[in-house]
Image (tube, rainbow, N blue to C red; front, side, top):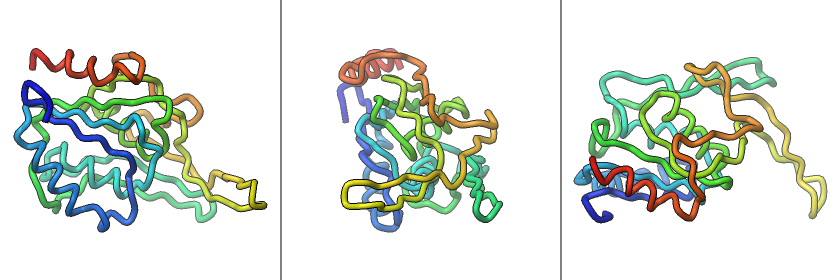
Length: 192
């Protein structure tokens, strides 16, 4: 907890399987429940799984009303998977807490998905730098010890914008250098 009852949590990865970190996440979210506002720090988060994004997002919405977060379209099977907030999760309901998300140019992939979803749904204020711009699900193919080809196998489709952040990143609501993002977020919340 930061000064003035501002909750702070750094998330360095959206890990899969989610079962590996679900209990720890519940503990962290319970600690945040006593805060007047929450800052999630994704400045050093290079990504992870959409299932982890789904789980973490679920703490910040009404559990009685599933919210469509994102759709992943996969070219090889010509099918889509929709991701909605989860209703049956353990831990506190943080839907009424103001939420700020810190970003950098390193924030990538699933960390961007979380950020883009929350920004599109007007659930969070994004503070920091424009993110890296990796939206498409990929497969990795090892060519040699020194070369790995990363091939897109689909695309992310946001239900609100009908597009994604591939190649352009996510522009923050409040643009500031990553090293000053936390101070700026605290400043923004000082009146909350």
